[in-house]
Image 1 (cartoon, rainbow, N blue to C red):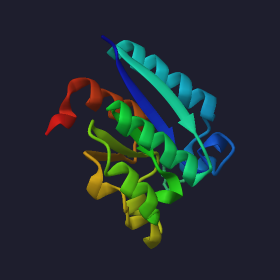
Image 2: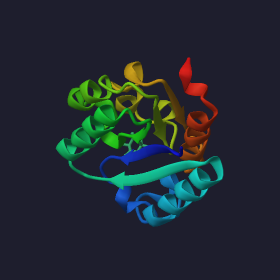
Image 3: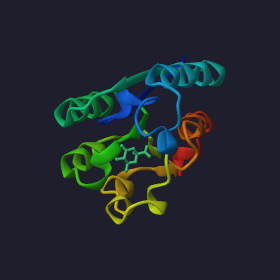
Length: 147
Ligand code: DQA
């Protein structure tokens, strides 16, 4: 059976390609979706990529993953740094959760150094551009997230 994985993206990530390309690169969000799906297919994963600017929609998708026992690759974007609602939703997941960031938040402004999600994630991959997502999918496929 193919493992279904949700790749969830928070605010402003739909603007990849035009948004601060010096920080986030010039590949569009559609390009990210294609790369994730291609890598997922290579790894035998059924990857579904979603993006929202809305905290409540993202929380709803995490509830869906919790109810379905689905692994999640999550770029919480700015919510990373302050959304306890998102953290509490992440804490309900039973399958692996990989937090990803395109940039390396630890090397940026101080407010980005805190992740309220990290402690309830299985692990975090940051700083590898869109490659962070592809590495996260590999971690899921390899079962590296089982502790
Ligand atoms: C980000 C880093 C966050 O600090 C920022 O708010 C984002 C993107 C990243 O992928 O590097 O929106 O999560």
